Image (cartoon, rainbow, N blue to C red; front, side):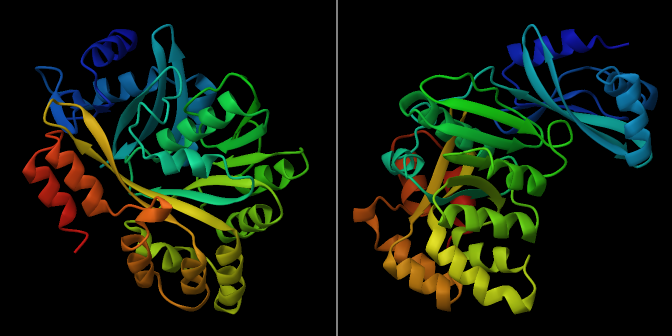
Length: 342
């Protein structure tokens, strides 16, 4: 039987971002963006199941057997971990994400100064976008920490699950976990509006009702931060409209045009020294951007970003090009990213 605490300790020592437990494969660590074997022998189906189940209580195991998937947070003396357990081709396996013990700062993430400005907006919606595992939650947590550190604001987060634990600094942060503290993102968001918030952070906007109430909250005087799975900024309008019935398209466009303050689209790139670094594309919503959101497709936002340097905007090619010029990423990494931004 593999000792789970020893496994987690080894992963931390190797600076692994993720641990993969899978039948008929060795334990795998993701280090610097690459999967690396962490054990000599392949795990049997029984070993994969036993390691995965070692993180669950009896009650959690019963829920897993009912739902066939289970997400949880696990903490020990060395750190905190986000774990997903599921069935894969009939066998039980798991993926474990190692989490920092405290939020990273905007400075540590090397994000442009405009991100701090967006975090300090009084109201409106700020979206952090990207595909899976591109550090969206880490960026949102850094923005929350910036607000918490510098302003006497009341911040309510709705997360599934809670990844970064915030301690009260100048402000007050109250974190709610879906399934434990509230039934859903939607119900948590509705309740948050009655809890005197200055800032509401939503782990992810997953359905139309949540999107609609988040936009309404942003329009009426609350700063709303959230993440959304989008492959590029110019897909944002289509992505949000895909959640809405056709009869509500114009209402959603108008709400988005009035409330959206900015978007941070990011990709987490492997560096030449084995680490990872964010490249980002940033849209600050100007009058021109609002007109596009009301009337046109997201493709036209591309020209707003390209001509918006004076507002703090930056394109992905500019961000990637700077990292390449400074020798932080390789030419091969730069080319693979920029192939999607032509």
